[in-house]
Length: 183
Image 1 (tube, rainbow, N blue to C red):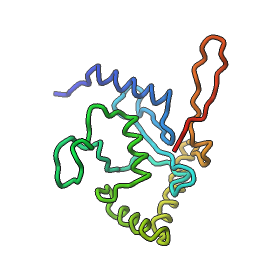
Image 2: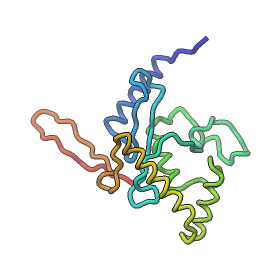
Image 3: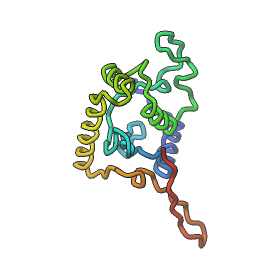
Image 4: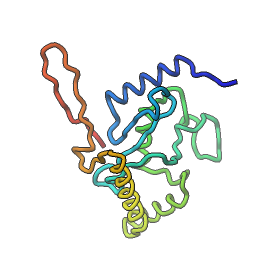
C-alpha cells in the first residue's frame, strides 16, 4: 500500500516554495526537480564572496545537521533532543541552519571525518596548513565550471551574491529595489 501525501502537506510545501521564490535566502538556489512534485527539491548553495568557497555552486551533498535528526534522546550524539527536529522547522530555517553550519562547522559530529580533521588542523594552525583551503578552492572552481555548463551564473561579488528584493507595486507607487542584507 502506497501512502499518498496529505493535502495539508502539499499546501504547506506549496506555500514554503512560493515564499522562497518571492523572498529567497541569500546564497541559495531552490527549485523543484519536477513542477508536479512538491516533495523533491533541488537546493544548491553559492559559495559566499571573500571566503574559501567563493565561486562555488554546491548541490547534492551530505551534511550532518542536528535539526534534521529525529527528536530522540541519544547520549552518543552529543545533541540534546531540543536541538533536533521539531514541527516549527521549515525549509527556510533549515537553509539558515546550513549557512550557520558553514560559518561554524561542528567538528565533533561531522558527516565527513577526514574533512573535519583537515579543517581542525587548518583552523588550529591559524591558516599555516594549506591542505584544507587548497582542496576547498579546487572544489569551488570545479563546481563553478560545472554550474557554467548548466547555464548558471555564479555570483562572485558581494553585490551579485546579495539578492535584490522588489516591493510589489500598489496603486501609483513606483517599484523600488532594495539590496537585502546578507551575511
